[in-house]
Length: 377
Image 1 (cartoon, rainbow, N blue to C red):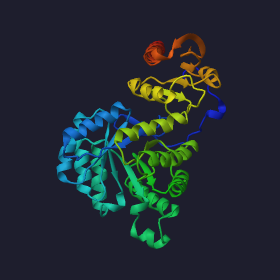
Image 2: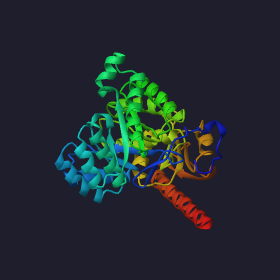
Image 3: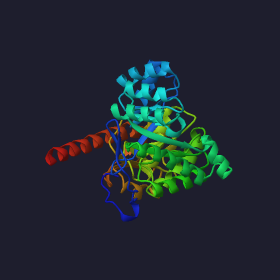
Image 4: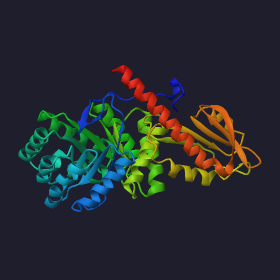
Protein backbone atom coordinates (compact mmCIF):
# COMPACT_ATOMS: atom_id res chain seq x y z
CA UNK A 1 0.00 0.00 0.00
CA UNK A 2 1.68 3.15 -1.20
CA UNK A 3 0.96 5.44 1.79
CA UNK A 4 1.37 2.90 4.59
CA UNK A 5 4.47 2.80 6.85
CA UNK A 6 6.32 -0.52 7.01
CA UNK A 7 5.48 -2.45 10.18
CA UNK A 8 8.20 -4.65 11.74
CA UNK A 9 5.80 -7.58 12.02
CA UNK A 10 5.18 -7.40 8.27
CA UNK A 11 8.82 -7.78 7.26
CA UNK A 12 10.47 -10.98 6.04
CA UNK A 13 14.21 -11.51 6.53
CA UNK A 14 15.36 -13.11 3.28
CA UNK A 15 18.07 -15.73 3.24
CA UNK A 16 21.48 -14.49 2.12
CA UNK A 17 22.32 -15.90 -1.30
CA UNK A 18 24.78 -15.29 -4.09
CA UNK A 19 23.49 -13.03 -6.87
CA UNK A 20 23.54 -14.33 -10.44
CA UNK A 21 21.92 -13.11 -13.64
CA UNK A 22 19.46 -14.59 -16.10
CA UNK A 23 20.13 -12.23 -18.96
CA UNK A 24 19.54 -8.75 -17.50
CA UNK A 25 17.41 -10.10 -14.62
CA UNK A 26 19.29 -10.40 -11.31
CA UNK A 27 18.43 -13.44 -9.19
CA UNK A 28 19.48 -13.78 -5.56
CA UNK A 29 21.21 -11.40 -3.22
CA UNK A 30 19.16 -8.23 -2.76
CA UNK A 31 17.35 -8.60 -6.11
CA UNK A 32 13.53 -8.71 -6.12
CA UNK A 33 12.09 -12.22 -6.22
CA UNK A 34 11.44 -12.85 -9.91
CA UNK A 35 8.38 -14.59 -11.35
CA UNK A 36 8.76 -17.23 -14.04
CA UNK A 37 6.51 -19.38 -16.17
CA UNK A 38 6.95 -21.90 -18.99
CA UNK A 39 5.45 -22.04 -22.45
CA UNK A 40 3.22 -24.97 -23.39
CA UNK A 41 3.23 -24.39 -27.15
CA UNK A 42 5.35 -26.42 -29.56
CA UNK A 43 8.72 -24.71 -29.54
CA UNK A 44 9.00 -25.25 -33.28
CA UNK A 45 5.85 -23.11 -33.69
CA UNK A 46 7.76 -19.86 -33.28
CA UNK A 47 4.80 -17.53 -33.81
CA UNK A 48 2.63 -19.28 -31.21
CA UNK A 49 5.49 -19.51 -28.71
CA UNK A 50 6.48 -15.86 -29.06
CA UNK A 51 2.84 -14.78 -28.78
CA UNK A 52 2.50 -16.74 -25.54
CA UNK A 53 5.74 -15.29 -24.17
CA UNK A 54 4.54 -11.78 -24.95
CA UNK A 55 1.25 -12.38 -23.12
CA UNK A 56 3.16 -13.71 -20.12
CA UNK A 57 5.50 -10.71 -20.18
CA UNK A 58 2.52 -8.34 -20.26
CA UNK A 59 1.17 -10.14 -17.19
CA UNK A 60 4.48 -9.46 -15.44
CA UNK A 61 6.68 -12.51 -16.10
CA UNK A 62 10.34 -11.65 -15.56
CA UNK A 63 11.67 -14.86 -17.14
CA UNK A 64 10.09 -17.52 -19.38
CA UNK A 65 11.25 -21.11 -19.82
CA UNK A 66 10.99 -22.93 -23.15
CA UNK A 67 11.41 -26.67 -23.67
CA UNK A 68 14.12 -27.69 -26.14
CA UNK A 69 13.62 -31.43 -26.77
CA UNK A 70 15.17 -31.72 -30.24
CA UNK A 71 17.42 -30.05 -32.81
CA UNK A 72 14.49 -28.39 -34.59
CA UNK A 73 13.56 -26.73 -31.30
CA UNK A 74 17.14 -25.48 -30.90
CA UNK A 75 16.91 -23.82 -34.30
CA UNK A 76 13.56 -22.26 -33.42
CA UNK A 77 14.93 -21.04 -30.11
CA UNK A 78 17.24 -18.57 -31.82
CA UNK A 79 14.32 -16.71 -33.38
CA UNK A 80 12.27 -16.98 -30.17
CA UNK A 81 15.10 -15.40 -28.15
CA UNK A 82 15.43 -12.62 -30.72
CA UNK A 83 11.73 -11.73 -30.47
CA UNK A 84 11.19 -12.31 -26.75
CA UNK A 85 10.76 -9.27 -24.47
CA UNK A 86 12.13 -11.26 -21.49
CA UNK A 87 15.10 -13.62 -20.93
CA UNK A 88 14.57 -17.21 -22.04
CA UNK A 89 15.55 -20.32 -20.09
CA UNK A 90 16.15 -23.36 -22.29
CA UNK A 91 14.82 -26.51 -20.64
CA UNK A 92 17.32 -29.33 -21.22
CA UNK A 93 17.23 -32.70 -19.52
CA UNK A 94 19.62 -35.33 -20.89
CA UNK A 95 20.71 -33.93 -24.26
CA UNK A 96 23.98 -32.11 -23.80
CA UNK A 97 24.03 -31.07 -27.46
CA UNK A 98 20.70 -29.27 -26.97
CA UNK A 99 22.31 -27.37 -24.10
CA UNK A 100 25.21 -26.25 -26.29
CA UNK A 101 22.88 -25.36 -29.15
CA UNK A 102 20.63 -23.39 -26.80
CA UNK A 103 23.56 -21.42 -25.43
CA UNK A 104 24.62 -20.63 -28.97
CA UNK A 105 21.02 -19.63 -29.80
CA UNK A 106 21.08 -16.95 -27.12
CA UNK A 107 19.32 -18.58 -24.16
CA UNK A 108 19.93 -16.65 -20.96
CA UNK A 109 19.92 -19.78 -18.81
CA UNK A 110 20.09 -23.56 -19.23
CA UNK A 111 17.91 -25.80 -17.09
CA UNK A 112 19.89 -29.01 -16.68
CA UNK A 113 21.12 -31.56 -14.19
CA UNK A 114 24.88 -31.76 -14.83
CA UNK A 115 25.06 -35.32 -13.56
CA UNK A 116 22.47 -36.50 -16.09
CA UNK A 117 24.03 -35.30 -19.34
CA UNK A 118 26.90 -37.75 -19.64
CA UNK A 119 30.55 -38.02 -18.71
CA UNK A 120 32.83 -35.21 -17.54
CA UNK A 121 33.82 -34.35 -21.10
CA UNK A 122 30.22 -33.54 -22.01
CA UNK A 123 29.68 -31.64 -18.77
CA UNK A 124 32.74 -29.50 -19.47
CA UNK A 125 31.51 -28.79 -23.01
CA UNK A 126 28.18 -27.56 -21.67
CA UNK A 127 29.84 -25.42 -19.01
CA UNK A 128 32.20 -23.95 -21.61
CA UNK A 129 29.25 -23.10 -23.87
CA UNK A 130 27.42 -21.47 -20.95
CA UNK A 131 30.48 -19.47 -19.99
CA UNK A 132 31.30 -18.44 -23.57
CA UNK A 133 27.74 -17.24 -24.25
CA UNK A 134 26.98 -15.65 -20.89
CA UNK A 135 24.44 -18.27 -19.79
CA UNK A 136 23.60 -19.08 -16.22
CA UNK A 137 22.47 -22.59 -15.28
CA UNK A 138 19.58 -23.88 -13.20
CA UNK A 139 20.09 -27.23 -11.53
CA UNK A 140 16.65 -28.80 -11.47
CA UNK A 141 16.25 -31.58 -8.90
CA UNK A 142 12.84 -33.27 -9.00
CA UNK A 143 11.44 -35.93 -6.68
CA UNK A 144 10.03 -37.76 -9.70
CA UNK A 145 13.36 -38.16 -11.47
CA UNK A 146 15.95 -38.80 -8.79
CA UNK A 147 19.07 -40.76 -9.70
CA UNK A 148 18.81 -44.52 -9.40
CA UNK A 149 21.63 -44.82 -6.87
CA UNK A 150 19.91 -42.34 -4.55
CA UNK A 151 16.62 -44.21 -4.73
CA UNK A 152 18.47 -47.42 -3.91
CA UNK A 153 20.26 -45.71 -1.03
CA UNK A 154 17.20 -44.07 0.55
CA UNK A 155 14.47 -46.44 -0.67
CA UNK A 156 12.15 -43.65 -1.87
CA UNK A 157 12.14 -39.94 -2.76
CA UNK A 158 12.80 -38.09 0.48
CA UNK A 159 14.29 -34.73 1.51
CA UNK A 160 17.70 -36.26 2.18
CA UNK A 161 17.85 -37.83 -1.28
CA UNK A 162 16.83 -34.60 -2.96
CA UNK A 163 19.34 -32.55 -1.01
CA UNK A 164 22.14 -35.02 -1.77
CA UNK A 165 21.22 -34.94 -5.46
CA UNK A 166 21.33 -31.15 -5.49
CA UNK A 167 24.67 -30.94 -3.71
CA UNK A 168 26.15 -33.55 -6.07
CA UNK A 169 25.15 -31.44 -9.07
CA UNK A 170 26.43 -28.27 -7.41
CA UNK A 171 29.79 -29.93 -6.82
CA UNK A 172 30.14 -30.74 -10.52
CA UNK A 173 29.69 -27.09 -11.51
CA UNK A 174 31.88 -25.72 -8.74
CA UNK A 175 34.64 -28.22 -9.48
CA UNK A 176 34.62 -26.73 -12.98
CA UNK A 177 34.88 -23.20 -11.54
CA UNK A 178 31.33 -22.30 -12.59
CA UNK A 179 29.25 -20.41 -10.02
CA UNK A 180 26.62 -18.65 -12.12
CA UNK A 181 23.89 -21.11 -11.18
CA UNK A 182 20.70 -21.43 -9.16
CA UNK A 183 19.02 -24.58 -7.94
CA UNK A 184 15.55 -26.02 -7.38
CA UNK A 185 14.37 -29.20 -5.65
CA UNK A 186 10.74 -29.61 -6.62
CA UNK A 187 8.15 -32.16 -5.60
CA UNK A 188 4.40 -32.41 -6.00
CA UNK A 189 4.12 -33.20 -2.28
CA UNK A 190 4.16 -29.94 -0.31
CA UNK A 191 5.79 -31.46 2.78
CA UNK A 192 8.54 -33.15 0.76
CA UNK A 193 9.32 -30.03 -1.26
CA UNK A 194 9.36 -27.76 1.79
CA UNK A 195 11.67 -30.04 3.77
CA UNK A 196 14.05 -30.45 0.82
CA UNK A 197 14.17 -26.70 0.19
CA UNK A 198 14.84 -25.94 3.85
CA UNK A 199 17.74 -28.39 3.93
CA UNK A 200 19.16 -27.12 0.67
CA UNK A 201 18.89 -23.50 1.81
CA UNK A 202 21.09 -24.34 4.79
CA UNK A 203 23.62 -26.27 2.72
CA UNK A 204 24.36 -23.79 -0.09
CA UNK A 205 24.52 -20.08 -0.76
CA UNK A 206 23.32 -20.57 -4.34
CA UNK A 207 20.12 -18.71 -5.25
CA UNK A 208 17.05 -20.90 -5.00
CA UNK A 209 14.28 -21.34 -7.56
CA UNK A 210 11.04 -22.29 -5.82
CA UNK A 211 8.28 -24.46 -7.21
CA UNK A 212 5.75 -27.10 -6.25
CA UNK A 213 5.85 -29.23 -9.37
CA UNK A 214 2.76 -30.68 -11.04
CA UNK A 215 0.59 -28.80 -8.56
CA UNK A 216 -2.66 -29.43 -10.45
CA UNK A 217 -5.37 -27.34 -12.07
CA UNK A 218 -6.01 -23.65 -11.63
CA UNK A 219 -7.82 -23.80 -8.29
CA UNK A 220 -6.19 -26.81 -6.63
CA UNK A 221 -2.73 -25.92 -7.96
CA UNK A 222 -3.04 -22.33 -6.80
CA UNK A 223 -3.94 -23.44 -3.28
CA UNK A 224 -1.16 -26.03 -3.11
CA UNK A 225 1.40 -23.56 -4.47
CA UNK A 226 0.28 -20.78 -2.14
CA UNK A 227 0.72 -23.07 0.86
CA UNK A 228 4.05 -24.56 -0.23
CA UNK A 229 5.71 -21.50 -1.70
CA UNK A 230 4.10 -19.14 0.78
CA UNK A 231 5.57 -20.94 3.77
CA UNK A 232 9.05 -21.07 2.24
CA UNK A 233 8.94 -17.42 1.20
CA UNK A 234 7.74 -16.49 4.69
CA UNK A 235 10.90 -18.19 6.04
CA UNK A 236 12.98 -16.05 3.68
CA UNK A 237 13.76 -18.89 1.26
CA UNK A 238 13.43 -18.29 -2.46
CA UNK A 239 14.92 -15.95 -5.05
CA UNK A 240 12.76 -16.76 -8.05
CA UNK A 241 9.50 -18.71 -8.33
CA UNK A 242 7.38 -20.62 -10.82
CA UNK A 243 3.82 -21.70 -10.07
CA UNK A 244 3.14 -24.92 -12.00
CA UNK A 245 -0.50 -25.13 -13.09
CA UNK A 246 -2.40 -27.17 -15.64
CA UNK A 247 -3.64 -23.86 -17.03
CA UNK A 248 -2.69 -20.95 -19.25
CA UNK A 249 0.87 -19.85 -18.35
CA UNK A 250 -0.48 -16.32 -17.89
CA UNK A 251 -2.43 -17.66 -14.91
CA UNK A 252 0.82 -18.98 -13.42
CA UNK A 253 2.26 -15.47 -13.60
CA UNK A 254 -0.81 -13.92 -12.00
CA UNK A 255 -0.82 -16.45 -9.15
CA UNK A 256 2.92 -16.00 -8.62
CA UNK A 257 2.53 -12.26 -8.21
CA UNK A 258 -0.46 -12.65 -5.91
CA UNK A 259 1.57 -14.94 -3.64
CA UNK A 260 4.43 -12.42 -3.51
CA UNK A 261 2.06 -9.47 -3.08
CA UNK A 262 0.29 -11.17 -0.17
CA UNK A 263 3.64 -11.38 1.64
CA UNK A 264 4.75 -7.89 0.70
CA UNK A 265 7.65 -9.26 -1.36
CA UNK A 266 6.63 -7.77 -4.73
CA UNK A 267 4.25 -4.99 -5.58
CA UNK A 268 2.76 -4.78 -9.06
CA UNK A 269 -0.61 -3.59 -10.19
CA UNK A 270 -3.75 -3.00 -8.18
CA UNK A 271 -4.21 -4.99 -4.99
CA UNK A 272 -7.99 -5.25 -4.60
CA UNK A 273 -9.22 -5.75 -1.05
CA UNK A 274 -12.84 -6.85 -1.16
CA UNK A 275 -15.39 -8.47 1.13
CA UNK A 276 -17.07 -11.80 0.35
CA UNK A 277 -20.43 -9.98 0.49
CA UNK A 278 -23.51 -10.72 2.58
CA UNK A 279 -27.08 -9.52 3.07
CA UNK A 280 -25.77 -6.15 4.30
CA UNK A 281 -24.12 -5.27 0.97
CA UNK A 282 -25.27 -2.05 -0.63
CA UNK A 283 -24.31 -3.22 -4.14
CA UNK A 284 -23.32 -6.43 -5.92
CA UNK A 285 -19.76 -6.80 -4.61
CA UNK A 286 -18.89 -9.97 -6.52
CA UNK A 287 -19.86 -8.67 -9.97
CA UNK A 288 -18.24 -5.31 -9.23
CA UNK A 289 -14.91 -6.89 -8.28
CA UNK A 290 -14.98 -9.17 -11.34
CA UNK A 291 -15.52 -6.14 -13.58
CA UNK A 292 -12.81 -4.09 -11.87
CA UNK A 293 -10.26 -6.90 -12.08
CA UNK A 294 -10.68 -6.95 -15.85
CA UNK A 295 -10.83 -3.17 -16.25
CA UNK A 296 -7.68 -2.60 -14.16
CA UNK A 297 -5.42 -5.31 -15.60
CA UNK A 298 -3.50 -2.65 -17.55
CA UNK A 299 -2.36 -0.86 -14.38
CA UNK A 300 1.22 -1.85 -13.49
CA UNK A 301 1.77 0.73 -10.75
CA UNK A 302 1.61 -0.80 -7.25
CA UNK A 303 -1.46 0.54 -5.43
CA UNK A 304 -4.41 -0.60 -3.37
CA UNK A 305 -8.17 -0.49 -3.83
CA UNK A 306 -10.84 -1.48 -1.31
CA UNK A 307 -14.31 -2.54 -2.42
CA UNK A 308 -16.46 -3.24 0.63
CA UNK A 309 -20.20 -3.83 0.57
CA UNK A 310 -21.24 -2.05 3.77
CA UNK A 311 -20.12 0.28 6.56
CA UNK A 312 -19.21 -2.45 9.07
CA UNK A 313 -15.62 -2.83 7.78
CA UNK A 314 -15.67 -0.53 4.77
CA UNK A 315 -14.45 2.73 6.35
CA UNK A 316 -11.67 0.93 8.27
CA UNK A 317 -10.39 -0.83 5.15
CA UNK A 318 -10.62 2.39 3.13
CA UNK A 319 -8.34 4.15 5.63
CA UNK A 320 -5.52 1.84 4.50
CA UNK A 321 -5.96 1.97 0.72
CA UNK A 322 -5.24 4.45 -2.05
CA UNK A 323 -8.79 4.33 -3.40
CA UNK A 324 -11.86 2.85 -1.72
CA UNK A 325 -15.58 2.46 -2.12
CA UNK A 326 -17.90 1.51 0.71
CA UNK A 327 -21.53 0.62 0.12
CA UNK A 328 -24.19 2.65 1.87
CA UNK A 329 -27.89 2.93 1.36
CA UNK A 330 -30.38 4.30 -1.15
CA UNK A 331 -28.32 3.10 -4.10
CA UNK A 332 -25.11 5.00 -3.31
CA UNK A 333 -21.86 4.69 -1.39
CA UNK A 334 -18.81 6.62 -0.26
CA UNK A 335 -15.60 7.11 -2.23
CA UNK A 336 -12.38 7.33 -0.25
CA UNK A 337 -9.13 8.77 -1.62
CA UNK A 338 -5.82 8.29 0.22
CA UNK A 339 -7.74 6.93 3.21
CA UNK A 340 -10.09 9.88 3.58
CA UNK A 341 -13.75 10.37 2.73
CA UNK A 342 -14.01 12.21 -0.55
CA UNK A 343 -17.51 12.12 -2.04
CA UNK A 344 -20.69 10.12 -2.40
CA UNK A 345 -21.34 8.19 -5.60
CA UNK A 346 -24.34 6.36 -7.00
CA UNK A 347 -23.87 2.64 -7.48
CA UNK A 348 -24.73 2.77 -11.19
CA UNK A 349 -21.72 5.02 -11.85
CA UNK A 350 -19.25 3.37 -9.51
CA UNK A 351 -17.27 1.07 -11.86
CA UNK A 352 -16.37 3.73 -14.45
CA UNK A 353 -15.68 6.27 -11.70
CA UNK A 354 -13.46 3.92 -9.68
CA UNK A 355 -11.47 3.01 -12.80
CA UNK A 356 -10.99 6.72 -13.45
CA UNK A 357 -9.84 7.35 -9.87
CA UNK A 358 -7.41 4.42 -9.94
CA UNK A 359 -5.93 5.53 -13.26
CA UNK A 360 -5.52 9.08 -11.94
CA UNK A 361 -3.84 7.85 -8.74
CA UNK A 362 -1.54 5.54 -10.72
CA UNK A 363 -0.47 8.48 -12.91
CA UNK A 364 0.24 10.58 -9.78
CA UNK A 365 2.31 7.82 -8.22
CA UNK A 366 4.30 7.28 -11.42
CA UNK A 367 4.96 11.02 -11.76
CA UNK A 368 6.15 11.18 -8.15
CA UNK A 369 8.37 8.15 -8.68
CA UNK A 370 9.89 9.64 -11.82
CA UNK A 371 10.55 12.96 -10.07
CA UNK A 372 12.18 11.16 -7.14
CA UNK A 373 14.40 9.16 -9.50
CA UNK A 374 15.42 12.31 -11.39
CA UNK A 375 16.28 14.11 -8.13
CA UNK A 376 18.46 11.19 -7.06
CA UNK A 377 20.56 11.28 -10.24
